[in-house]
Length: 459
Image (tube, rainbow, N blue to C red; front, top):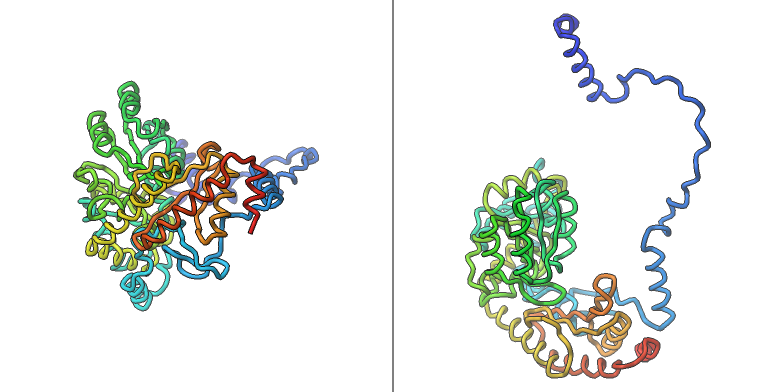
């Protein structure tokens, strides 16, 4: 080694020494000269108290105010069994509108049997990242089935739908690129854009003229441009204009990513999704994102696209590379649910009939359902958060479980109750629910916030 070092130039020796120091850390660095006595350290202890986190005081205040006004916390309710069209809370069987089980497959015998068989064969956990620890046949079978569903070359599954969006957007674009998303896009899309360090712009909800004008004016400033929208918007229950988005992405030379979390099993005659609804070739979309936790009765997310895209993500998407692989039982359940979706289109028809009937009934009763298309997701607008929480509580007392969506998750004047419909809701229960919602909504109409909470506290 000493012979080799003597053959190095001075610059080469300095470079070698630098590399060795970086590999070995501080142990090989030269000792630093003794420092002068440090000044007394400032007291930063208050910043270590979790109670002082931004927003924590506001959360405590809202909980205290709600409790003082007789309002229970409507969140984190304890369900005593599986939750679908019905659930049991506090020993009471309730009509449930707060689960994503659109086609009732969480209760399907074949889905549960597939999960049990996978546990017997593969155990509970994948135990480590698939990159280093390998994978199971059921992982590949699910990914191939999803790729085929979207007419794509390949697919990659993640243990979280949120991570699928964040990791994929973060891996695809960077500082020289642009992400443009619908103003109502999911938090995971926004966070993925932030983490990518690409420039981020939003366009007014479903305003494609605004999107096209924006890209016309600034497209040339960037290398890659990624447009992101949702197929079926989970807050409002309306659809993206997929044909229009495809036309813009092709005209402006951009990628198009569609978050299909809520449209699989819901849109289209066979429930294939937003592409079937509009009759668009799914291969004209560059990146399909979806989740397994809604129609497919499992947990996790996926990205379907071209082989180069998926191969790149296998080694570059942090939410996949550095995360444990999907549990085999979860993958098996999702695969069984996807097969049932394709085999039993009558479930999709029942869901559509239920959702359209519920939305129409709400409108006839004078309830504001916003821009909902009547496709599985129907909001009832309340106009303020206190009324939303109070109305939710009154409905709970009458055997209906539906969650309020309130500020700061959405603007205060857009507070609402959000109803998720299922193919398994009996039509008579839907009719009864509409009547009950209308009665309680009318009972709270025009009242002051104090009166609303007094009424909500009655039993």
